Length: 523
Image 1: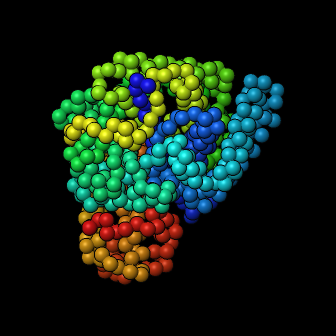
Image 2: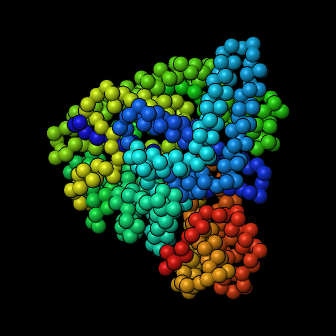
Image 3: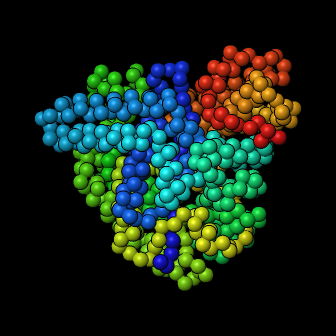
């Protein structure tokens, strides 16, 4: 092989769990991702194993997502969601009986949902166990991210919070996968100088940056983004490849915008009679996505009916084009480096299947074409690349994210800037609690752990991002305020008024993430 390719899929969702409600709209974020992304990805990778293919990819599973996937309440609610999808598909088969095009699509969805339910039953609800077995077999490498996907540069003035985010994530990863993580997905690929100190403490060996984070390193990297660089303490930074990202992400040039693909936004939850779809909606009193969509992407108001065969043909074409482009890249670079060049292609996992319905098939076609049809490019994980080529240039990365305009604009702007002064005060108070009560036991230890959980959840980058995009701003605002107010109440109870055990028990049952969190990480 002349060169290597690392596909890195970042799977993350904010921690959304509301046992106080029988049905909650935002919990559908998880249910949709399981149905459309996580189970299809497992099926694709299992297919590679059955075929005897060596096609290792890297998967970042955030601690919040892992917690939700393992939660019995959410597993039970997902089953209810999936059974409702199958019932809706059956209802659609009858409704479309005299319309052949729509009836075939209704049958397609019924088959898809029943196949997903079979896979869910096969894995016995334990998707984390399924991913863990794939890693133990050497099929994938699983990495982590910060505990609640906090944007680490926004915590730069409080280093102990960066430390707590990283070490808590490390501990959680060990509890899920029985080993320490070798790599980490810095949330939003956002680097801040000094983070590598805490990565070293957590025994993490590498992370990924956006393209300009590596290209603007000091000194400039000799091989650009086609080889990792080492920070001064020896942690490796891999840069995102611009070309492979553009071909998937670009709004104008990206594959998912092809008019043969399924339209994400045109859903029967909005198209059909409200009373007809009401029992199957995420929230019964308002319209929403059901997952059944009959139209393909077109530029006009009069959408054309989705053609599954044409869409899969497009996925095959795009997989071949993507492979040809990587071969061209590697062929051009081969011989210019003192080792095989590496192309790092990181994406949000939820793009494949959820936003881009044919995304899992694209990955499957691409991996099979790469394995069987050429001898220029090999799939490899960043960790294995480091193992093979341990000597690399030393440089200090530049400030960067892969968000809007390449820096922090999406998380620090006029819509969300009010969050950060409140976080700063809470972080300083948490530091004070850790210093004052390093060896607390009993009820006080429980309260300190819960205070740590509430602060971690308040630090999530999801809340300022949602406020910026405006998708569910009221929910994001309420979640941030709820976690902050619970932290303030816990701080006051610990230091002054005495701990209300009944209230603490209720809060522990609601925000039950990180059962063994260590508040001393904030010291």
